[in-house]
Image 1 (cartoon, rainbow, N blue to C red):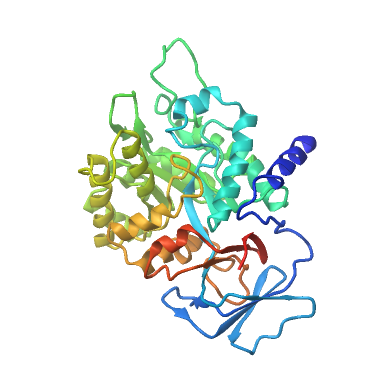
Image 2 (image 1 turned 120 degrees about the vertical axis):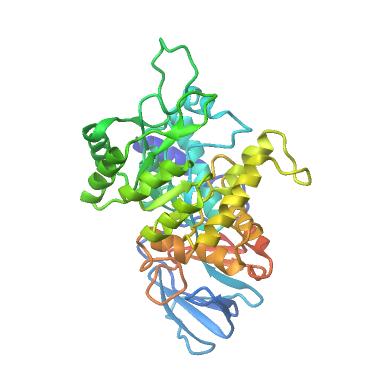
Length: 432
C-alpha cells in the first residue's frame, strides 16, 4: 500500500501544468502570507469590504486589518491582489469522487466493470480538479460500489500525499434489500451492489456500526428508490428503521443524510431525525413545511438533474424536459417555504471541477447571488458542524480562501475560473 500511495503521489504531482501548485496542507512549517488589495467578503457573507489586509499564519487567518495595519512576520510573503475578490473556500455537500460522468461510462459499468484501483486513482484526480475549482471542502456521499475508498482518499489528502479538498466521508451508504442497483439482471445471480444492504432495526444498526468503524464521518441512507428498473421511486425503509439508523449514528456523534425524492420518504426521514435531505425532487409543500419545522436542510442537486437531461438528448435552448421543470418547481417551493438550502451538486454524475454549476442554477431558479454563495460557504459549514473552522473569512478560522477575477454577486460565472486557491494557508492552485 505504501508503494502504491507513493506512486499515486508521483503521478499526481508530475501531471500537466495548469493551476496546480500543490503543497501539502499538513506541512509543519507553512509560510506566513499577507493578502493585500483584494475586496474581502465580510464574515456575514453580505458584502465585500475594501481596504482590508488578511494575514495568514500557521494555516489560519491571524487577522483582518485595515490597509497598512497588518504586520507581516519575518520570512513571510506579501501577495498583492489588487483588482481581485476574496471569498472563503467553497463547500459542496453532495459529491461522489469515486464516480465519473455518466456520458463517459454508465453507472452500472462503473460499479461492475471498473477495478477498485482504477476508481481510486480516478478519484484522486477528481479530488485535485475539485480543489483547483475552488472547493476546499467536500461531503462525499457514497462510494457507489467502491467500498471504503473515500476514507482512504480523505486520509491521503489530510496527510498531504495527494492534493484535494477536506473530505467528510460517508462510505458505502445504506439500502434496503431489492432497492438499489445494479438491478435488472437475471435474479439467479447475486451481483455486487452500489451500497450496503441492510434491513430491520437490528440489521441497520449493525451496518451503521460497521461503517463508523471503517471511518465514516456521516451516514447516508436511501430512504426511497426504485424497486425495479422501470418503476418509480417508493419509500424503502420504515420510519422505525430510519429512526434506528439515526439513533445508532447519533450514539457515535455522527449525523445522517437521506436520499429522498418522494414526499412520504422525506416525511419519514425528517421525523426520524436526519440532518439533510438529498434531492427532494417531489417534495410537497406539506413536507417542506415539516423540514423547516425540524430544521432539516435541503441539498437539491440541481446540476445533476440538468446533466441527466443532457445525457437524454436535451440541449439548452430547447423546451425544458420534465426533469428540469420539476427541479425548478421544487426549488421554488422550497424557497417559498423557507427551507434552509445548502449547496450539494451530485458531482460525479457530471464532471468534477464543474461543481459551481449548482450555484449558478440556484441563482437561475430564484436565489439571490448572496444566498447562493452563502449556501456554499456559511450554510454548508454549519451543516457540517464546522462553522468554527471554515466557511467564512474571519480571524481564527482555517485559511481556506479563493481569489476571483470578478464580483460573484454581479457575475456568478466568476466562480468558474479562480485566480488562486488557498487551502489551510497554502497556495495550492494558481498565482496572483
